[in-house]
Image 1: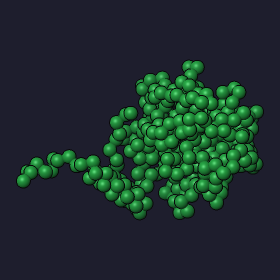
Image 2 (image 1 turned 90 degrees about the vertical axis):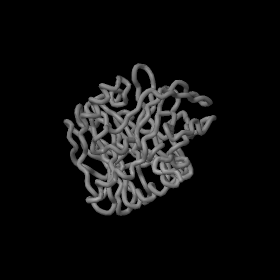
Image 3 (image 1 turned 135 degrees about the vertical axis):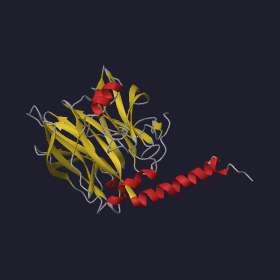
Image 4 (image 1 turned 45 degrees about the vertical axis):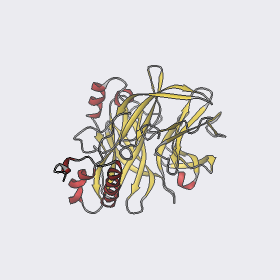
Length: 329
């Protein structure tokens, strides 16, 4: 008889079964509660491109939006209001637990404070990830709308409310589309809806943001849960280009990985990891972080905590279902 049975390491098959049971139990009782925050630090500091000390200082100075129990707020994109020096609009996903579907909301942001909230865009299908475009002072968003197989740009008015739709791709189930313009060509980074929506990075390119969009010769250009799915706008720093990506190994949106893009052509793509953005240990939103963007003097991120879908009194037991941290790739 093995008297040390309590210390025996479970087999990979046993551990996989335990993880599946834990995950099923977790998502039947608990859920990820997302919220958005702004910090008066540059995106290069928040992204860790100027060292860990500056990054920690930036992440210690987060101003969180007020939250409510009936929905979550995630995927923030910030833009300065045209013609103003210190007024911003933040677009984000508002997901109602009651109907389990996202819409796009917009909140005023001025002098470090969140202001009035308005509905920007609603649809019978799920909406999220409202990537922001600005052209000659006109603001538009490119939301994730893969459930409707639609890729469209929506022009918004000065209050952040969508007014005009222009379809730039049909019959495309693209997730978290993120644009890049390099001077003569537009690039679109995304994943595809389905089983690989967190692990397979795809690139499309076109001469105009309105298409036609052509697939990269090497699609998918990357297959990795660690740093494939886009996590916000590209970052320009020190004459180099950086791409935030989601780490989804332990769970969806566990943190961000920041990669330096070293090669991008119609037939080639290469990038290398340079830093990470993680939730601060001991913080209220310590379970996830998966979108980062910036405008002017502010950078916005989102953060998640574990919340009970049954009753607030059960929130404190959510830590029992936390997955083990993953080692760096």
